[in-house]
Length: 404
Image (cartoon, rainbow, N blue to C red; front, top):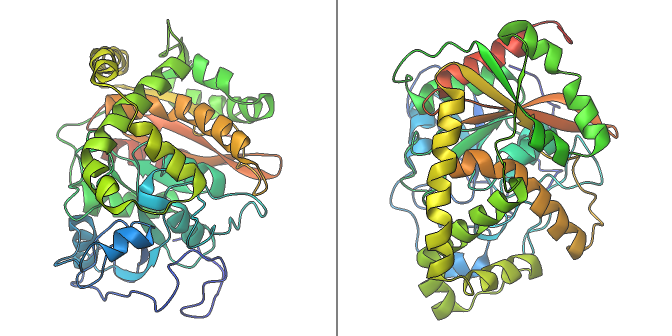
């Protein structure tokens, strides 16, 4: 397990955990995660505590949880200890990592820049050594993007692979349980507990290069990530170019993702939004208001396109290929970025993250590059259900000599 900084027990110099007394839960068993300290994003239930979802009005209108979320239970029974609830963007509906009420967790790997969201506190805590690993969620990129920005390993699993019981929903056909670690071995150990076994054996023998995704990255970012391709080709053979967003382009797929996600969010939270009139930060408030403008006709048009993209990606991957793409288009944005810049950056991020989200595929982000002195993740998308095989491949890749 990678070592982190030696902070005093309970210290939070990064603002990663919720303010106030730290929520701690002792292990419920002895197992493969003995000694592992885990942070938990504040959309996961912990028995006896209110799940706040990053918003005081949500916390005010909901009671304490009756039991731990299923993912938390699995970790506790395997010997892990929960050492605190981490800050999330409000209702997990952002990729920036700024909470209007609780602050912006610091990015220890890129000072002066955001962690990314919505699993911002979890990423900050792990990157800063406040815990060994942390649970988050990934609906539109909330594991993959913070992992990239904070120099972490992170997995968004196959949709429905890990039960969502006890996790605050956002958009249920996209929501997944994910996690961060500082090393590939810990990421894989947690995967063995949360995922169970793959339904069948997967042997990766082909590499697909998402050319249109690389084209969305800045020139320095694309160059830094392309320099890693020989390391992958040494294991999988020459990369085969693919443009999964054609013919419309990845931004068009990101817009379909936003429409489908927005409609689901409105169905999930619309009644509560109308009844409570919650106070959100400007960016999140703007987005929730936008979901009310979406129409059934827009959803009806986007849904079959999603099915077609899923089938096309499944065919391309088969059961033996990995698709390589940037986890994010550039390094983490600066903290002083204005709202228009945040919107523009989010649009470019979603054009990269929407593929795995729309198709329900597992994607791992690997902290193998740096640009502008900051971390940048390289992502691999695997066939549906190949989560454990993907984690094992990632570990072997990262065990090899740098640049091999």
